[in-house]
Image (cartoon, rainbow, N blue to C red; front, side, top):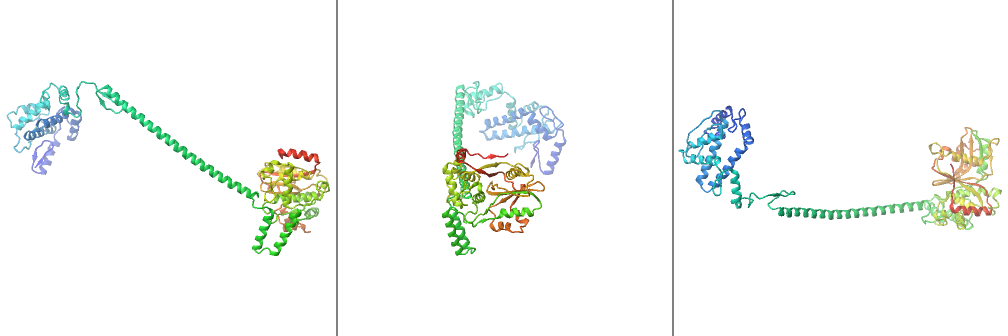
Length: 578
């Protein structure tokens, strides 16, 4: 058997039930409380649940009351369920019918509810209907009592006391039966206090205050914990930062040490030996590679030891006569040159096994000194002197430091040059020449004076050094001017002359200690080729280093002037151009 959810009527088959439900859906649905119509069944159910919530809630309350009141009797429980089914059936029937009907059919003995229609006007009609059926069966009487309970003065579910209204009944239940409730209350009229922090309801203000104080203590404790945690986090962060700083400083120190050691090696201050040690080591390498015979090794070693003993260069790297060959060439050839000025008698010295990679400054001093020794104007200062070997030059510079020249430069090189591969520059050349009473000056071209990083002012200064009166002079002029020491970062060379070409551009003639003797000797040939001069010529575009320094010799110093310059070298400054 199938039972209709709308009216409770039972049918025997599924097709009959579909036909029965269709009848419900086709009839107009009317609200049993407010007579709303024109909507379908689902919408009407939603309307009743929302617009008439209180009426439905009353029905649910009745069901709870009924459960408490009749829970001890099985027969009464069945009757309650049967009555509730009648109520639901009457509501569904009122929703599904558009004609008010009253059915007096009795309930069957098996407890199955038959279809009943009530007046759709209101539930009061249904109650009148129940009162008119007092002679019905016991179940009908129970149903009547249920409705009377719903719409009559409320009765206490615990002691059956009747009150005038629901509010009085609620007060009665809370006061008389508080022990049966979830939250017992001694006085329903007592003031209640809500906790502003958690919403807990308290019956006493002092209890609420203590409760709130607990909240505040908990909050204070939480803040204290947070402060402790923050303090620990801060300590950890500081420790991590300190560790990172320590590692960074350690790494910076390591890098600085590596850079310092690299500079020491670069400038020959790493205590790896000096000229003698390097000469022997490189000659041994040549023997091991088969490029030098052992007998040649021993012969050169003997010559070196003799040279070091007397302090004079052995001349193995010297090339003489180049200036005379250049003078002849410019007189007879060089059609693209308008005029040329040359220094007098300069020998070329190149690096050897003993000073390769660091000896350019010493070799340039040898070139400069070779010219001064051939100039009678400097005989008084250089009387009886020969071109010294590199270890001797180192010793001479140390002697000049001991006299008081350039104390800053001496401290930078640890007051020691002998036995090292330390580089020397313009300051050391100036110090050595001044100690020999040679008048000279340092000129610093500290920045570019032309386009693309060039130094045209350098060329102009060198031209003015060589040629005081250019007009009317012959094409090639061999002056009495000593060569010029030219220094830039990492290398130094010697300027031995300058060309003024027909297009009015200038070109320096430069001796480079890095150029071997075999190349320089090509300049000694009578039929000198123009290509051989390429290694000497340096145009403006060829000199693009950031800074250049020159040491120019200007004559001889008296003893008084030498002392004055020694005192002035305590705070050494170079002349800057521009």
